[in-house]
Image 1 (cartoon, rainbow, N blue to C red):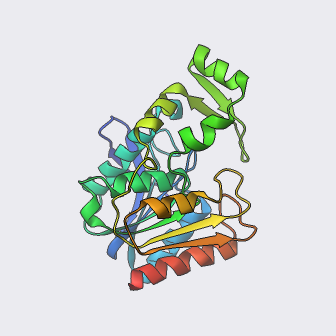
Image 2: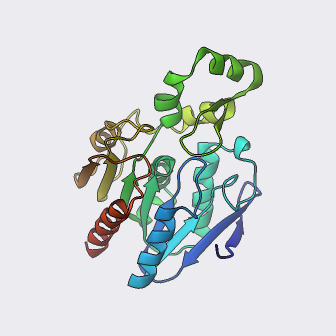
Length: 250
């Protein structure tokens, strides 16, 4: 693990990031919920881009990885603001977003932000999970979890990885405000959506929801037979790099 650079965010937290300069557009990897920039996809993408001489950015949202802040205090809106801070103060020129899970939601929020939108030239979603707090997670809460949210302001969800996920009422309320699947998504850029059919976190219909709502006519969906939520096997990474290279060639 190399030492990251740090940027003070507009919320007062130092954001950890690695920025490799090179040819535009800058490829930006947006990680998922409780994930970080040291994951296999982020590191493999950085190595791939460096070999090509392509500019690349990976980072940790506040409360994640090596960035400052408490995870339980974070929200989708604040993490999207972290991305805007990095893109306006660290990276120049055109951008290509690669968003994994929650990073797909934040990619869509950031790509439609008027301050960033003109710079975004393409988007790859990996098990992209827009609106997951309200439309995927909340309907499956148990009575006990709902009672905890009401009484304590937080609850915990089991995770396929390590510790359970802390879920706060603050996160859920903000998630409703950041929803993107309630109407058209004004994006006229090439979009590639990769989804595993064995994903237990994001329903296989989710990329089709995104496809139907974006204004772009250049949308391709790849359903990976046997693919899980992370899509980080060797074959998955080869597929990801192939999609990236095809978009960069365009």
